Length: 553
Ligand code: HEM
Ligand SMILES: [Cu+2]
Image (tube, rainbow, N blue to C red):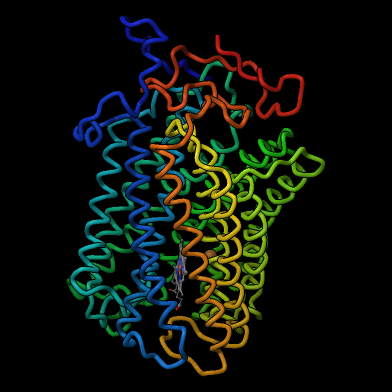
């Protein structure tokens, strides 16, 4: 049962007056931002933070790619190179990708999309941002004091017994940040259960909400496992109690099991919210109701559940019995099914749609293509025989970047463009945005496609030097990375520009369905002047109900 979510609107100024005030200009002081409990302001705080981390991670990537321009390791020493790719991975995974969509777009949109005034626990939401920043500070300290060289996976026993770098600092940072994830997940779950507007039944929820619901389940159930794992590393490193190091009587493979029990599902923390974004964009710019709504909704849950039982595909080469490997291989193939269901349904939505190619749509179409490549090559890796050949080669690096960068980052950019007018009340310039989307797509493929070939030909990952025969493909990859960097820089510039100079945005510039578009742009602090009541099915694009699917009582 949906419970009415809004407190009665405070008496005083007439509604029109109150609605002119937006969450952005409600108060200007720094304290009003740093102590805010408004989910929209917290979303903006997160947006700024993850952007900073993305730039940082990008700089490390630039170092890695420049080193690989030449076969001789001449730019970075081997151990410096190790630190670069480790810190690139740590920052990008734990401090950018995991929080990127849920903590920014999710924070902003989950209450608005369900017609609520805020999240269920606004103060805990603010707390989660501080926890995130605290964890980030530890990770930054680890870098400033000399870096970490274990790889972002912290494999034991190297990380517990041998590395002389700042493993502890980085581990503490990741441990702390995990709590931000858990708190956000809890907040979303309770909010979605308890605070939906009257009439907003489960099967009328936007698919973005379903995706965030599934993501939150993984965050709450999975994150404690990585926290405990890291804690055990700390115990072994600090107290020399044998848990993972065979020299102390531990089992190094145990670490891999624990690590991937979280980190495989974590891939879905990174990609599921993106899938939610893509569902919203595709149906809007194809102007057709989404094809197979309940299949897309349920496939999110299926991915969340199945994602927990495939971790063994990371251990095909580490002392797993052939029977275990067989089971994990089959399960990994099974988890591809719900993903394929989504791709199929998006394609069916596009089929004979009245498609228009605004920037968010370009990103969404790019997502479908790149995610499909990433997903299909994941099947290669799930096939034991093939994995034995390409394990720990650049094939793997290419595969996960197709998912995490081609998929999740494109979805993040697409969603940011789609909801930017709502978030900040300004339109960005359309032409540069389209150009940027195309540049990102081209740069991305030039960067990462050659890496499939490199891996197939046998170039291992995590080496700062390589045989000369691999140079041509590496030069292509580095050239692509430079183009990609330009593609990322452009939105950064014109989005900032739009904050001051962009034309004012209408409440619903895309003619989209969904409660968030019924509010002013940018929304007032209380989101809705009156409690919205939902009387129609979602995604009524192109139907008689289009444009009036949501009646605000
Ligand atoms: C935006 C999200 C990104 C994420 C989540 C991400 C994630 C990762 C991770 C986890 C690793 C570690 C691989 C390993 O341990 O072997 C890695 C390595 C690497 N990444 Fe990224 N990355 C991102 C973006 C980029 C970009 C934009 C570039 C290039 C322009 C890039 C280039 C590289 C390179 C060259 C490596 C080193 C691979 C190796 O030597 O094994 N990454 N990335
Ligand atoms: Cu996996």
